[in-house]
Each structure stands twice: as structure tokens, then as C-alpha cells.
Image (tube, rainbow, N blue to C red):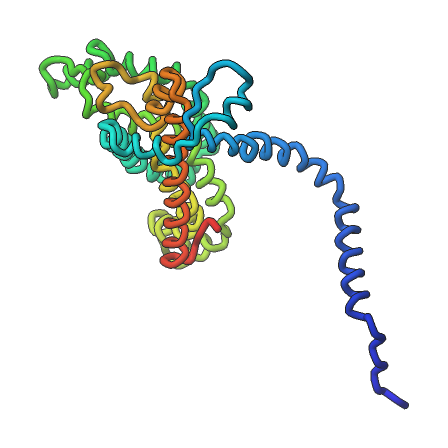
Length: 327
């Protein structure tokens, strides 16, 4: 019997390509409902993330609102290049703004990044189901309180007759109340601790989700080998959630210039202005209140470029050191 394979007809490669294309069209047709569900998210992303990017051109012109429509003035205003960036770097505000932004951001990372991890480990070790659920619910409730309410709570607690001063004087740690909201250097610590208190419970949810995905058999084997709960936490739980920690660390470092706006704007006063002004409040002050729209756009673009560079850099470092990365 002749077992030799038949010769392939000419144009078989073209037929294969057509079959693949047909298969892709078939899959698109089969999954059309999924793409319809994705359509609102795609439209919102385009509208609020990509379409507004044409406004970055404002950072390179001297835009001043006046007569005529917005688009007429926007595209006919004089092009000034990097003039607004140069003005930001050379005036006396740059050093102060960057100092306050970096100081508040680093302190917020120092307290705000490890605390959700510690809280998630504590919640995971709780064995009483009712107490565990109650504690977790109470811990992330501050995240849903607006900064308007949270700022008033913080100001009241730190006032001369507030609970903090009452505790310190009652324990004879201080002789007279401390004016916390009147001391500039203390403002950085107030912002950092406030951010940590408000968001640590909500951020712990991501770590709890990562912990819930750990194979329970690992803990059973560790128990058989005589490992205590502390050793199980150190040698099983923490290494298992390390990828999540690295990814969130990359995002946190990328947002190092996002010191915040609501908390600074609501907690600041004239006596601490030299320590409370950050990039976001500075952009709002000059860009909207003073009508320097192009200058505000330039400062905002500078912050975004720095954040982009930091995310790329930290991601590459994490990829080389831990073989874990965001992309």
C-alpha cells in the first residue's frame, strides 16, 4: 500500500490564513455579548482618560480666557514652549513645594504601606469568626468617611482641649496642651498618620484576598512538622503574598508625588502654609483660583511625567531583583 503523503495543493498557506481569520471572526461573533458589556468601560476610558489629553497642549501656550469660544482661543493662543516649566523650576516655590510633597509622601509610605499588611495578618490569625468579621468591618469604615468629616474629627481631637491633649496631660507627659495644628513640622506627621488611619483597613482587603488564595495544605504540612503560628506566618503567608506586596509597592512609589489634596486643603491654615502646600494644592491655587491655567497645566504635567518615570524604573528594578513586576 502506498503510504506516501499527498502533495499539498498550492495556496494552502492562504487557505490556513483564511481559516484563522474566519475563526477569529467566529469567536468575536460568539463573544459579542461580552464585548457589548465592555463597551461602556471602553467609552468611559476614552472620554475621561484619552480625550482630555489634548488639554496637555495648554502647558505649552499662554492661554487666557476671554472673548470667543474656548477652542478658538485654545488653538490661536501664542505658543511659549517650556516657559511655564522654566518658571516653575526657577521661582522660589519649587523647592518648598517639592520638599513638602516628598516629605508627606515618604511619611505616608512609611506608615501607610506596612500597616495594611500587618492588619491583614492580624485579621487572618483571628479564629473567632464573629469577632473577625466585626473587626474587619470596623477597620475599613474610615475609608468611606469623607475628608470633610475626617478633617473635622482630626482637628477636634488635636485641639488644645481635645482628647489627645487630655490624655497627654492626664498621664503627666506634658504640662500644657500642645497646639498641634499651629506647628508646621508636625503637619507632615499629622497628614501621614491620618492617611494611614483612613485607608489601612480598606487596603488590607487586597492582602486578605491574596491570603485566602494560599493552599491550606501548606499550613497542614507545617503543623505536622511542628511549626508554630508565627512560623507559619513568616514562612508561608508572607512569602505567598510577596507578589501582591511588590505590585502595590510599585504603584505606591509611582504615586510618590500624589501627597493628596483634600486632607491638605482641609487641615491647613495660614500658620502652617509653608509646610502644608503640596503640588496638588499649589496647582489648584494658581491654576484655578489665580486663573493661571497654563501654569497649572504645566505643573500637573510635570507631576505626571515624574510618576510615569518612577513606575517604569521601580518596575524594572523589581523585575530584576525579585522577578516580579507589574508589566
